[in-house]
Amino acid sequence: MIKKALLYAVLACGAAITTFPFLWMVTAAFKTIGEASAASFSLLPRQWQWHNFVEAFQAAPFGRYFFNSFLVAFSVTACVILTSLMAGYAFARLDFPGRKSLFAVVLATMMVPFEVTLIPNFRLIHLLNWYNTYPALIVPWCANAFSIFLMRQAFMGLPGDYFDAAKVDGCGHLRFLVWIAAPLVKPIIVTVGLFAFLGSYNSLVWPLIVTGEESMRVVQVGLTVFSLAEGVRVHLLMCASTIVILPTVALYFAAQKYFLEGSISAGIKG
Image (cartoon, one colour):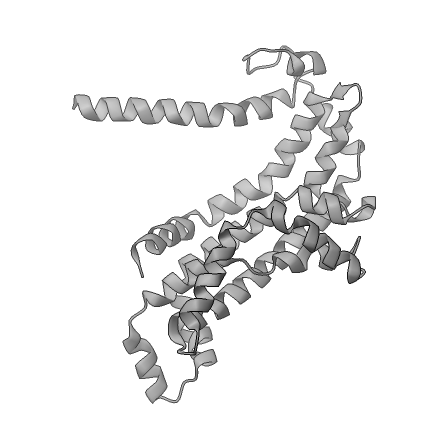
């Protein structure tokens, strides 16, 4: 009984520490700039400043920023799911020369820091005349090694009898992948999609580098408009950040069941 009480106490403390920054961000959105900038742990504002949200969204064209972010994030997510499904299935079920070596090379790319490929990727974007275009924001992130690894592990966990039975019925690899294998690994697909969406939606450095026009900016870049030479308008930044984070929170809660199932199964299969 005492152990359980201690466990709950530790978990409660961890939850409080984790959620406090988020709660502070939300309440700071309703404070004056003086209250929000003060070195204080006070959550509730003295007087609720509801007009902060109007002022924050008048500071920049956030409607356009949100459109760009959603377009890029959903496009990247769709492409990552497609490429990881096909590549993961190929590495798991197709027997071709150099399969293990090629998969090892794919995994090795996970150890290459983003900063190493930043300049080569930007140079390639420049040579393709993609600067200030949607392809520059989407194409470089249409596949990643981690998603391929997750999908391969999921397909490796499927019994081989499924494919043998489908093959007897005249089902080819593509048809088996679309109609049988993919529905069986839906939790992993949702997990891959969540990671891809969050990674694209929260991206800052790459969109900042490959876009120069305001019409091509995304919301994460839009948040930088509150950092001025004279200082950061903290209260307005917290307003915009609160709205910007809502889609990711809503998406996570909507797909929470599949995300947990996918995370668990990815860890025990293969």
